[in-house]
Amino acid sequence: MSLIHLIDLQSLGDERGSLVSIEANNHIPFEVKRVYYISQTKQGVSRGFHAHKNLQQLAVCVAGKCRLLLDDGISRESVWLDSSNKGLFIGNNVWREMHDFSADCVLLVLASEHYDESDYIRDYSLFCAKVRE
Ligand code: TYD
Image (cartoon, rainbow, N blue to C red; front, top):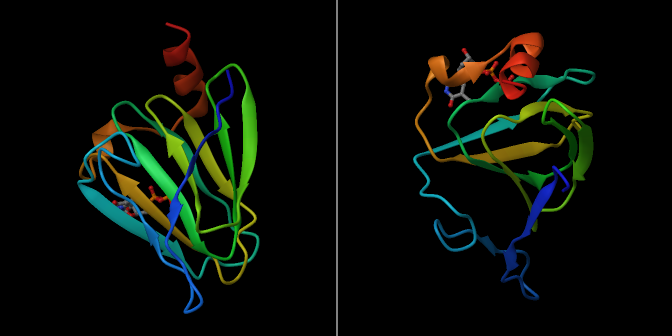
């Protein structure tokens, strides 16, 4: 099964421009407790490099593009987020890295839980050991 779970977000755009709507428990399978966005990323910078024990997220590039790499401890796959209609669902116990941010990239993330540092696994070898338990 692919690690890349893309969600086609509803486009309500018309001749005036683009409008995309995301409803909790409808277009995405969780309640949203937190929203954050990443922008003005310096050229050549990569982010992420962690997994979560209990967190569901949806990542959408609302402007520009970046490449998301997902890894379940067995295989790795990457996908370009390059459209505001394209949401990437990321579940528990998935290592994620964000690469190749365009200068204009705004990466919006909807999350199922509040920020909790104790939910992070930031060490790749610990992550691999945990998913093989
Ligand atoms: P970090 O985990 O390094 O971001 P990324 O996954 O993009 O590499 O987060 C940077 C800092 O921001 C770190 O000190 C934790 C803090 N932070 C919050 O306080 N709340 C949040 O929702 C997020 C995502 C990060």
